[in-house]
Length: 160
Image (cartoon, rainbow, N blue to C red; front, top):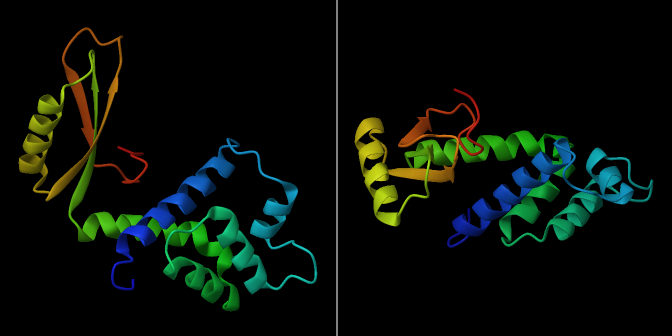
């Protein structure tokens, strides 16, 4: 990415992934126009590049890089692969920066000190530079906590 664009590009990629996830899970009410844009069935007058630019505007991209990448994909007729590209980008980002996601479920809310302690211990266990810790409370647990890591889908924490 351009200098100073890494964080905005990553935020935009996360928007793209969240958007496709919400569409897949039927959690997002989208207009027929938007679905037509995504599926490439927009009006005959609209080119693939026009479709990519319209989607970029609708998503509210923060970076200057991703809208250009959308146009590139459209010109090469690869825009339908955007969801897979976004997934790959996030997986590679976690690998490159040596980040390991972990989910901790506890009977009671964890304090910041407890979270930091868990992160430190998980860094030792996994050898990671950083831990993306997501915590949740489950009142059905009698006490203590449960930690999950080594996910197949690192960003969405799915898999074993």
